[in-house]
Image 1 (cartoon, rainbow, N blue to C red):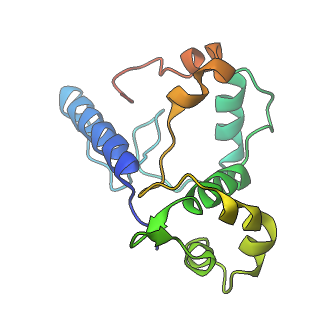
Image 2 (image 1 turned 90 degrees about the vertical axis):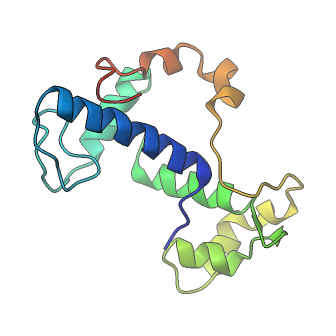
Length: 151
């Protein structure tokens, strides 16, 4: 179980408001899935995410294959290790359990150096503004073509 961090809660809340309004506007049936197919609007099990990642990567100026789900796990783990738990740095074991590991050895081996990070936050956050200079026009390219789907 992974906490629903405030930033993610805000993003999902905005997404659900826009999605609900679009379904009402278009008299579309409600889906049981949080992220139904954007093409059909119908519920269906997501089987292959690599193609989706490739489309996003290409749209943002990277090559197909540059973004994979593993990068998301690494980003989360690194960010989570820089958070506080009850006012103290979060333990490696807590993060390992959130990642689905039985122990903390993998997290310790790969991310052990993050224990020396002095910046700590109460929650995991990803602030795009901090990376605007590096990402440049890639951020603009990722704006949704259909603003009814995503805010």
